[in-house]
Length: 77
Image 1 (tube, one colour):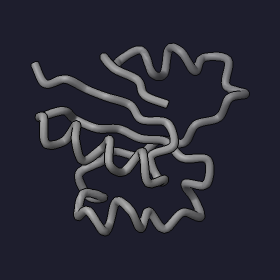
Image 2 (image 1 turned 180 degrees about the horizontal axis):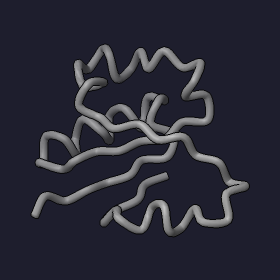
Image 3 (image 1 turned 90 degrees about the vertical axis):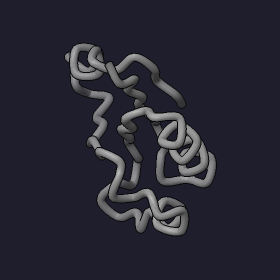
Image 4 (image 1 turned 120 degrees about the vertical axis):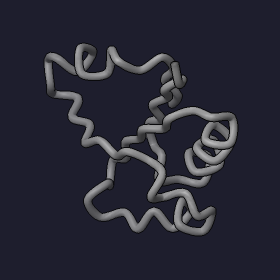
């Protein structure tokens, strides 16, 4: 079974490099970003990995947020 990781703040430099590392190790990578609707994801594009990541909207007001992300084996912030 493929390992699945969720990265909070994936649009930044650190999130992009962590995504690249995990993808190279065979992980399925999911990510969130505060400015997901406005972000250009330039770091992910520069690394050529933007199309390999599944993006999620993250709303802290959602009372079921933990249930939403229960599917992930690893979470990074």
